Picture 1 (cartoon, rainbow, N blue to C red):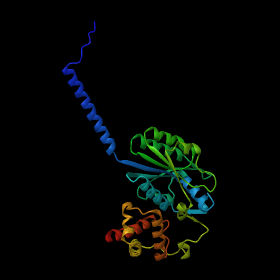
Picture 2: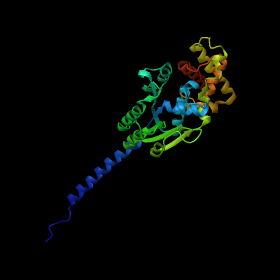
Picture 3: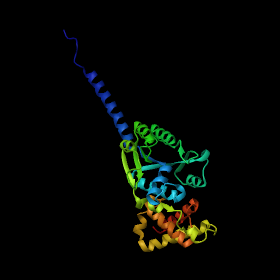
Picture 4: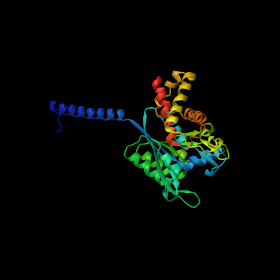
Length: 308
């Protein structure tokens, strides 16, 4: 004889109440997931950027043969990431480089002073080879992904040793986007790294050219003898406003309004154009003066925002 009894009204009510609670919890979870802001960070192997950009533009990987406008290219990376991830907030840019005894060089100190940039140093051996950079990238990338501090990671590098960093971050749910610099021939990024990334992007000669200068060339400082003192902050701020006023009259308010979503950053080509115009007016190079370049942009933005 079957002892099972059909559920009574009380059992059905309890079941319905349980299902309602489950649906309510599920709705809360989905709502929270839907409203959680996306956050991205960039992890830049400076050694790769120097070597790849130098080879592409100047024909050499030796840092002694060219100058890299690190500030300019970092800001272009930031600007490009804001375009690709329009609904995401930038956590910061991690700039990984090597230094003897892990002591910052003057150039690395200037980069460390940039907003939203964190310089992380590995060792530099007697052959000027970086040691420990890959492990730093893996540690930071894995830690941020594990703690859900980022949803997307932009990795700029090419070493196969970074595959483990990509896999670790993906294991915690982060998407990893591999960016590289065009190679004159073949590839300068390991194939296993390309296979593991969620997406890939390559920057070409036109992108890199404004940020690389052969040391055999003549820059604005050399044209003026390189002896004059750096201009004052107020003078640089005034020049930034002066260039903004000229461009507003030439290009119109609509063009300037298109720059506002990226404030306080400028698109890479515009930033380079501003730098060149300012150096011509100042008769002095601002390359290597990260503080004055920020003042220049401040002056530019102050005038633009005051006119819109």
